[in-house]
Image: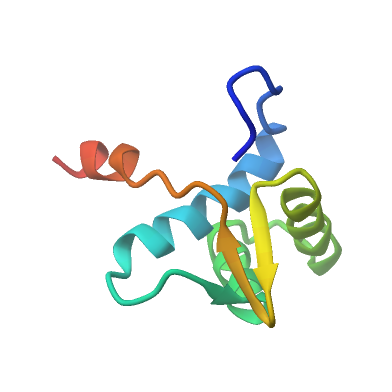
Length: 89
């Protein structure tokens, strides 16, 4: 995740990112997802997104350091699960 001084994500990109982060925070046995899984997670959370929107969001997140790729898996650069734990209490 970019450092404190970097600008926040555009709202619609954040709407694509948060389901990915939530998914990994809820999975104790996984720390990555495939591109296909990421696409499905974003589409499920954002039914109004087209495939091109999802691809653009994933490219943006990768190019701006929010996601990184190893082989065929995508990882979140700095997973922050505390915000999800607080919202469920």
